[in-house]
Image 1 (cartoon, rainbow, N blue to C red):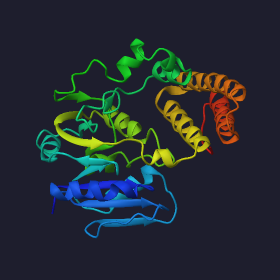
Image 2: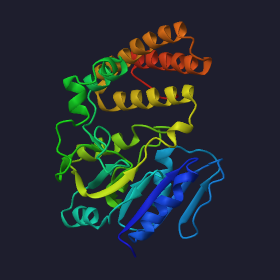
Image 3: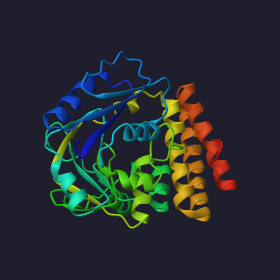
Image 4: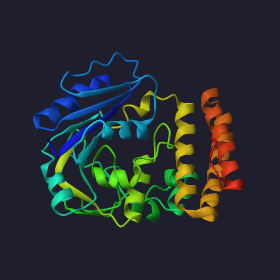
Length: 303
């Protein structure tokens, strides 16, 4: 039995699946693929465990399905638009021999450069998210809070403790996954479920390590691009609000929700003047209503 198995969640990523599976095969990593009801005619390799969902169950639920489908003590979470460039044995060694709870390799672009600002970040704080949703990071991306959040100060060539590596290339232990109750499937269909998992793991006293000698090429955003703009807006803000209310406490969580409402109101007015299409405006308006409810009642349930 292999000590590690890769879990790949795919949604209309047929152009990339064969490459990521081939890279896993090259380095002796067995693969579980969970397909979230793709409609692009994806052809899956024969030498994988394949789970076909009849509907899009969301990323977190699909990850949990994938972990349940294999019996290896370690799970390597890989995006379908990633490709292993090195062996992952060093990640496994760190996770097992040194008893770290989770380990991430380094994501690089097509030129081999580290994907700074994405490969690893610090956990978001109320201030981090407030600056993001109010649009301040767009007009002043180099502000100290944003630079700290996106780990601009880290030397990505060094092995080090980190807080929130990207879920695109992330190894964790089955026993931790079981103790935490898996990935939280209420982050639907995507966003912040990997951040939430790392936050809960660290709160439990765990450790997350980034090991830069293990590398994967990452194209980025392939499945997300398939979402319509209005849906993408609703899903991103919904997951952000869920994270804020869960981890920041009632006061700070509501303050973040209030900032979301203000930021969306600005975007809504600007969007009307710019004649944005109705699906985008609809997504902004629906997210405004949700943020108002969260700010008033401190709850996101049933949304």
